[in-house]
Length: 83
Image (spheres, helix red, strand yellow):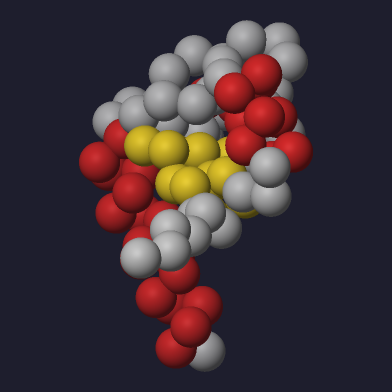
């Protein structure tokens, strides 16, 4: 059986501060999406998407935990795919 390398990693509740780890994954051809609610450091990871309400301008979602962010992400994707 031949093993295949994943093409996408979705990190939930971690990853906002994982600069080096995400860079290594991307160097090996893996895209990374980070869904996290932890306080970001000054440097941001080089992922294809960072879903973290604390990583940008103040907004109404900063009190959500990661499961709430995943729900909002899934809801937004569903709405986009239906359009």
